[in-house]
Image (cartoon, rainbow, N blue to C red; front, side):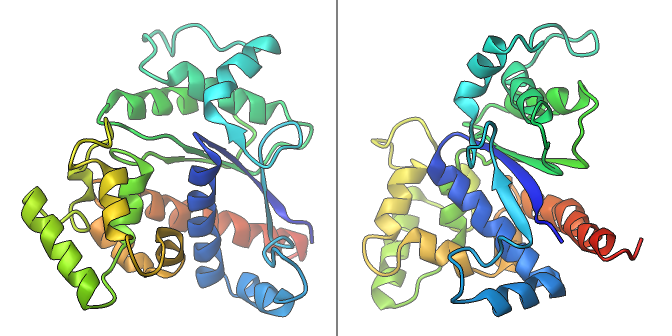
Amino acid sequence: MSALGIGIAAESVGDTRIIQKLVDRMLIDRIAWVKETVEACQGSMTDPLSPCRSWQGVEGFGWLDLHGAWKRARERGLRIYGSFEGERAEEDAQMHRAALLLFAEEVEPPVAVVIARDMDGRAERAEGFAQAVAAGSWPFDVVLGALPEPEIEAWLVAAWVPEDDSERQRLDALRRELHFDPCVQPERLTSKSEADRKDAKRVLAVLTTTGRDADARWADVLVERLEASGAACGLARFVREVREHLVPLVERGEASASGQW
């Protein structure tokens, strides 16, 4: 059995890690043979999921910088311009099309592609992503969009749960300051300036002043909480996409490798 390739394009290596941790955990939680493989490989390799899936960018890199996709595709002479089924391109549509074209041009294209892009309060970015997906006949079985509102730090805020009295007091203070609970309504945060008291990065920094860092909490928070607290910030939608499309794809890959279908 060979690992299934999952392409990932994001705005930073940090965003890439956030998406990978969530997807990997859902694969382990929901696919018995993946969990068994990970348990068997624990301690013998740095990435125990490597026999099951591989994360890839383009040209041998582990991820694709979304901001550089347009320039890279243009240098290759790929067709990124033009309308989308006769409609004008919404914001980011050409950037997303460039990323998908680059993955499609790989010698061994991935079986799925995840694109992570902060929304920053601009709904047209989601429309641009949908346009790009619909604009081509991609060699991917599924294309997933991780579109955080307003930015991916809001997802980490949604995952944060106070673990002692000092953390509960800190969250209470933030609730009074913001006039809402940022962990329950992360979509109400902003992404314009860290000087803004509602800025997602600033709120996350306040919440994690002490105790476990955001990455550690993100790695083990219940997926059910992410769905409950992340309905309006795009997190619940992404969790559903992974569960309904990517998880079955990996399961089918194992069945195919085993000659079951």
